[in-house]
Image 1 (cartoon, rainbow, N blue to C red):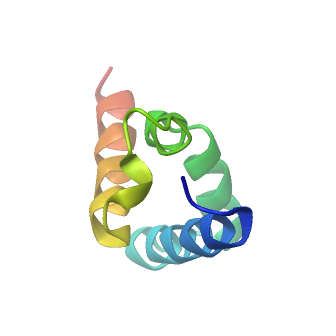
Image 2: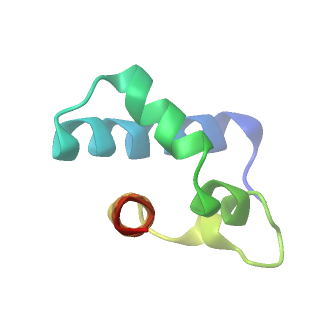
Image 3: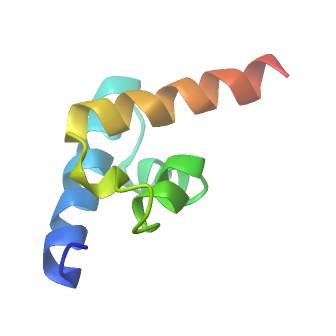
Length: 71
């Protein structure tokens, strides 16, 4: 598992990608991140999502958001 500092840095990079890609504020992107299933998986040591690339994880969260909007 990543140390707290490394996890915070990773979250910051993902939030920045979300904000830039979607044209939303960093605060909105942070909320989107924390409400995502991807966030839960990143904190699960068995899933090891924290080892995935920032771009991949941001794209996963964007995909989740699109699925929610389609429901």
